[in-house]
Image (tube, rainbow, N blue to C red; front, side):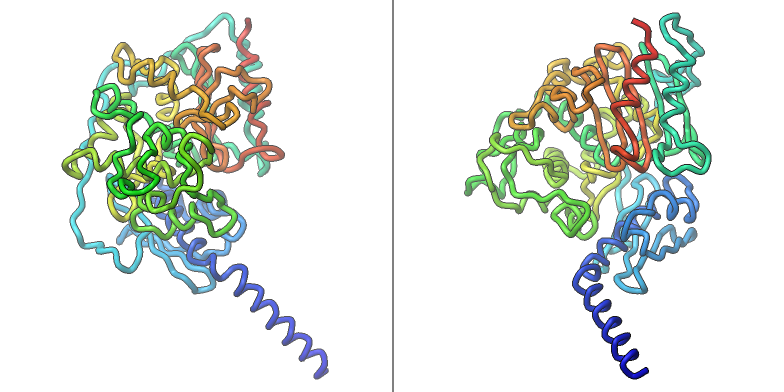
Length: 449
């Protein structure tokens, strides 16, 4: 019996040591992810805690977190086995922000001035219900089957699609939502937000207020080799700056999102590994640096806050959208854009029509072409904060497709040759979970040639 107890004690000690070396350093990130996810999902989209834990947070290690919500105080708290407690607070008009002990919650904050699109037009150019339009060249039974196939059957948890919206020739031709979601549900786009950030620069370029081919306006780089990095390099993820984008471990990306007070400065402070325009490297830090650079273009914080919405988001009636900020007040342009699937489709429509929104040229056609032109060394898969199918990632989908893409399979697919925008949102991506190539092909094939 004594021998057995010694062996048991040894096993317990080894397990504790293994946990200490492998998991404990991640606890701050685990509870940080969970608290932010719970606060945003609950206060932005009114999701109950149980739904968030079963669908948003059922990720390996993240599911270790214990969560609570304070509706009166508008915050969420998460910890792991009572360790590394993290708090995320909600502020109406700004969304949720993960905070640390140094954050002053009593400090006044500014809100972006929003303008709601008011007209009598049907969706997508207005906020009224879409027209019931029938196209003779659409096989609607085939289209319905394609959309239905994107969702799990009752009780299934393989594909995990939450929403599908399909636009064809400016009309809504298909739409479906999973249980618990509807056309008014705000869903996190994750890295689709990068494309929103890109569009803000597109407006500044159209206004003649910035030159993306000049060295990036980063004063901290003026006296070292990084002084030659241009905004064009940053937009193309081709700056040569050091960065590790890995969400399965402690990396630059996870430390930035769940620990940094000023996310834009994380990439700004990284050294150069390569010469600009020679080494493509996907970096959420780069996009948050772009957001910080954008902030520095305005004299006041209020002007910066307003610009994101007045220049693009509210301009095209994406009135449901909220882009959340970091603790310093910079928009998290890499990851934290929330909007309804219908509003995400409006953004795709803007780019489908080469920057024109119902007769108003919001972005120059040249900007949209620039956006969809492959980045040097990306092998045809990336443009300017948009992904591309030019390299054939989806073999059965037109090569002219370019798309916004986010963690867990968020997508706004823009297909000019088919006059289509296809939105899919969910909590799983890639086979064997979700087959984007097959889904897109089935939807496109419902349009008769």
